[in-house]
Length: 242
Image (tube, rainbow, N blue to C red; front, side, top):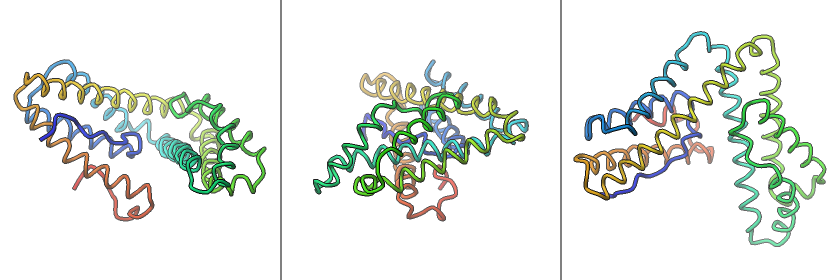
């Protein structure tokens, strides 16, 4: 038994996985604690809004943009993590090269939470600045493949967003991302509320809720980690179920 809820990389989940995650959280908390206050109500309202938008047939053309944006967001995160790792690499040559890359990369704040126009403007500027470094430096810093993956993801998104089909749905796709962010914030607040209730021994069932949430989150984290390392892509249909 623990009074803390294991945090997971919510944004690494696919949209349908986030939907299932919301449902499971609501079910677990309802079964153990009931509708326990404003934190639960806020998360429930956000989950309902997310479900409504995701199921809206009018948004169907923009689902391709949602997935392409997720790929680009993940590519940026992967590049960020590789730079951090290279900066503390055992080989001095890798660290020196990574410093040059980081001098450029660190000047652009994380753009993945911005609206699409700002995000992809920032990413394209970042890529153009990184392109001023010679190929050998990028290879020495172990980031060349990560930069290429980000370049491809950005190009794919920009191509899709400027197409005739997706131009109309660009704003709608941004709505889904905004609602997903709201669900994430509401989830964080609910988790903190449950932890507080356990620490104060003020809510019957809160400890059971945390135990069940941690069991679920442990499975999700393991499968997301496996996906990230490209070891189980074909085996994962839904990280929440099963």
